[in-house]
Image 1: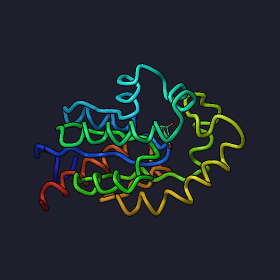
Image 2: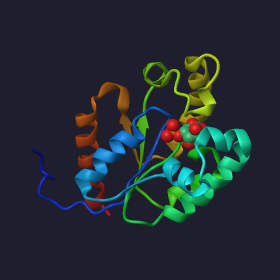
Image 3: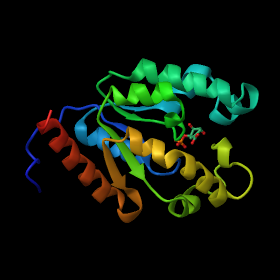
Image 4: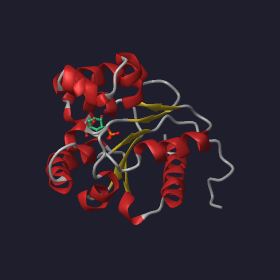
Length: 181
Ligand code: S3P
């Protein structure tokens, strides 16, 4: 129980963070709690393209995937939903501007070490499909952490928390955010 329990939270939060940080799974729990649909941007792209993320990377290339990602982001922003983005969403300046105009944006911050165990060998993630997962995540983190930070209205230290506590922390933040708008 907390001071926000009986308030209706009516926001459309966007989750960002490296792959494996729990955007989809925490997003699902958050959407259920807020009684909102979850829009998973990767799933949205896959459905539209009619092929999997690895297929898109292989056949069309990463730049084409990034264009699809920006188009998808534009299409879903503004909907009353929880939006879980792909880990690379912050790379394009255009996307960062879009995110900035649709708060609140929540960064599920997790270290490469925390993530490496969780996603090692995941064949659905082309950027870590081959080679040393930890090294790749460290390289991505070095580039992306400052961008996530720049985009985030709230930072959730993901590694320190189990999912129920992470969910509760986000809900409390959202209630606070709403109360201060
Ligand atoms: C990517 C992350 C993936 C997916 C694509 C590229 C990235 O999403 O969009 O494989 O650049 O970090 P998840 O973060 O949901 O795994």
